[in-house]
Length: 540
Ligand code: NA7
Image (tube, rainbow, N blue to C red):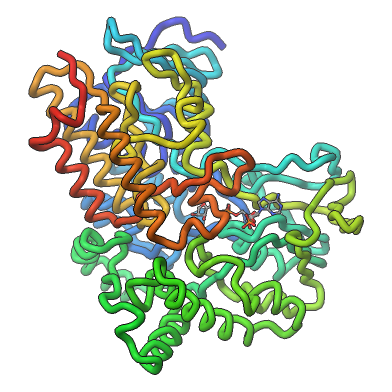
């Protein structure tokens, strides 16, 4: 299919998820720019469009894992505190009714190259299906988990049953009743699939490399009265979320571990485990992620409570070992619903791929390094993503010297505010690296980034600027600060995707900003104030 004409825009947004839609709304509806969203998928939703795997649901609570736009939240009711993927499909239909997003979306089209022409001060963008787009502002809003990570197992293509990466799971229902199923990977995704499939499949075999310190999901299904009560409080709830580190409404703990008595600690840790949600991860004390002793106390409580739920001693030691393989909370805990109890069934098996890695996929099963073959009918590859940088580094985005963004980041990531990159003028990267991204309630902090993009463009218009590009020194300082903060924490002790350590060959460094949403927001707002001239190279 040819697309002969060049599409001329003020702004092109890549990705029709929360960040893409927020940006479209701010730039099109508030600044009146000519904006389009382009998306490789066939519908709105981003993550919530792609991740149709069994059991997929959000683990940030309603009503604030949502757009804070009044016209949207006032006319929507959530059915559960942690809604499932299907509900998000309906939600994005609702968002479209309010904001008219789809009319400015180009679906099923993937950006393959983007370069900036300093003469015209425009980005020239091409897609896999031959579209050509020229735009002053370029906003890849592709999220942090769009590039799948599939280990290079021998024989992967030979499997004769059903096999998919979790985020490419078919939309039509795959019936597991009477089937032998396998799940490789026990991150947030693996846990959700396992606890769903283990209820129905004939045999479920879980391939675990690292245990997930999952926390009980405090799920609730809302009746009409609680929906109404929630709606009445939503404005206040959004306001509370603006003030906390994670963009969730609960305030962060103020006391440190050493300021609490053993009894007080024990009582709070148990209470948080019982209440569920991310309470234990947000911390019973404020030094959970910096103080090894404090961290161990939370881990020990988690392990004690979790071990009590697992009957088989071998499974117990694998799922909740007495010695933690990494500090608590330095890998993302999942929220579970009866996950551990599923392993008490005789037809739910656990394979330790830490001691015996998967080495091959055969036409009928999975082979581990001890030469055992597990015959299965269906395999879910839940091995995660080249998170943060993966999709941006492979989109063909080139800087003023013609060097690819992936190449620029080969030795480590440099951005200013996690939103701009030196040498890539007029490009903004919401919900990606060196920002609070996975440490926040996404939509809450995305709103600030969309506001920043709107405000900086507004400022450019007011001052007659055609281009802005962050000063390399400003970006270096942003990077240095993220690296320095990470060294004060326990995060470097885990091989996590937060650290880029899940991808062979990727530089190991903390990829995200952990000082919290309010601090991040202040830095963004500051940069458009008096310091603007020092921080950005501007051209008229
Ligand atoms: P994650 O959190 O990266 O989880 C991937 C899982 O796959 C994790 O348990 C990995 O073990 C495991 N893995 C990865 N490679 C292998 C190999 N080669 N062999 C065995 N096991 C492997 O991805 P998710 O999709 O669960 O979650 C992504 C995020 O998206 C989620 O946290 C939400 O924020 C949204 P490991 O722990 O590395 O030992």
